[in-house]
Image (cartoon, rainbow, N blue to C red; front, side, top):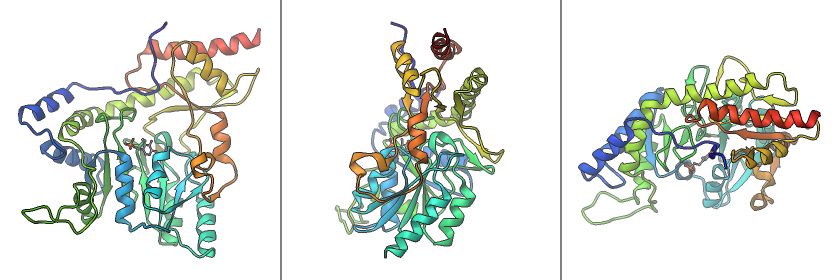
Length: 380
Ligand SMILES: *Cc1c(COP(=O)(O)O)cnc(C)c1O
């Protein structure tokens, strides 16, 4: 069996271990410590725009705290992009609120501004104004930010920006993760940088970030004993994990560069193949970190995205269909949905190719050789 080629695996630099060792040597083995503070400063400096950052145990925890800070409660409705990972939507249900799903547009595959506005108008007509909008930048591609923010501002609904896949991407030169009233990042093992598991909440509102740190450490009031006036959570990032994060921040620009070059390689290789389409940046204003290289496969010679996926699997190469939209998930079958089938079509045609920043040229060659062979065989 050939060596496994992963979709997106962790890629450590030179300094991560040094930071972790420092945590051990100083015995800061806890969900607080100098690396947690340092990682928050590193992230805030990288993102710019005067943001504040709270390092947390996961991106999902960050989304949950964002909803709590915006006052989302049982019975409320929250708009969420349908095409995404389930973690974008689950925290809505943690709060006892109802997700209202909105379809994607063709250009960026992210939330459609038209369907967003239609959803807001219809929910208001039905008697409930949505409490928040959860917007996602899929695979690192920026959403149509100007148009989305214009709709959100018009109806005065705060945006929670799920930038879990988009650290290192930007829109009109502004880093993703700085657009939302609150934004979230993820450092799960498969993301562009990782802390093994972790996340962050980002906002220009310093009070909110302070509040999120308070809620994330069991909501302890200032007292010598344990005193509580709020329900708290155990959502803080460990100082050991934050040490990994500090090392990863030093190589983030290199990781973006390599992931973008993976994408360029696939795009150039299949430029002549009319069945395989790439998701291009719509204009120069959109800059994607290309967390994952994705393709749409139009059926040709009987080859579909599923044929490609199974063929690569036989050679121990991992690929995955695009995110299955939330409105098609059994667990969300009863949730309202506004759209025209775009995300459903993308899901049917789309495939994520191996995209790690640690892929070698031999790895990439192996992937494209297998795909080319499939089309060659189909022709003869
Ligand atoms: C990974 C991811 C999350 C969740 O992050 P975790 O750190 O794994 O909890 C949320 N939203 C999207 C779009 C993601 O890809």
